[in-house]
Image (tube, rainbow, N blue to C red; front, side, top):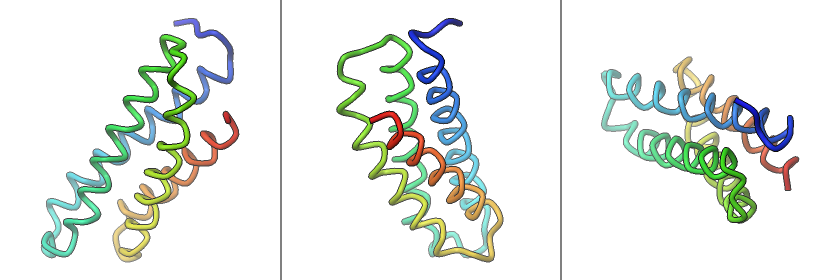
Amino acid sequence: MKYKNQKSAELIAILNECAATCRFCSVASLNEETVKSMVSSIKSNLDCSEMCNLLASYLSRSSAHAFHLLKECIEICEACATECEKHPHMDHCQECAETCRKCAEACKNAL
């Protein structure tokens, strides 16, 4: 698939990776024995996954509204990373936090 430019294609790939990582983290958190303590993290994962999917969709069709969503995506990715970092003993949370920070940085670079 061809995009308007290579930077858009790279950002879309990062957004898709972040969305998938967040979905994986939310499901892995549901399987934890301490699932009640993971509710905020799971909600944050779902928010981040949806935001990344939405922005990737807007970018893929070169929507004029994608620019506005970049700022929101940064905020949501950073919030998700902060929430996941509260669980340092869970590898899936640490991987998710790292991916969310990478995604937020890529969105900042696109502004």
